[in-house]
Image (cartoon, rainbow, N blue to C red):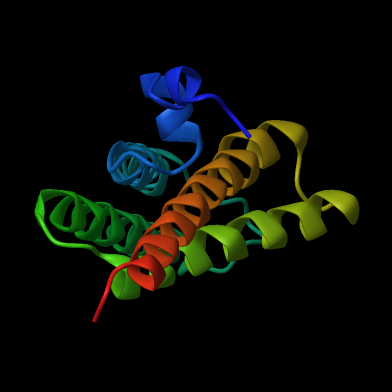
Length: 144
């Protein structure tokens, strides 16, 4: 168990999910991903073997990422606990990591994309789950 002095350090509180700033991490990751996908959808021409609607899929995915980023910002700005709503975001981040890891293991995803998408989502998922765990423990301790 960490000493009280070490637990009060801002970075420690962040990693343990004791800071609502974990939500801002989700905001930043999602908006950065949305910008990257949108830029790729407009700048790149898909190779001939890729379906013609691939840029549309990328643009739609960018909008989904931006929507979730906005959602995390909304949760951050709320002053009340956000446990029930945050579970959905944590599950999506976990899925992004698991999917990326499976594709990487199969050799279908390069290292750069695995790190930029899979690992970054995995880290944010871990932060979200830590935050959710903290909120759940606080609710369990508080009288009804």
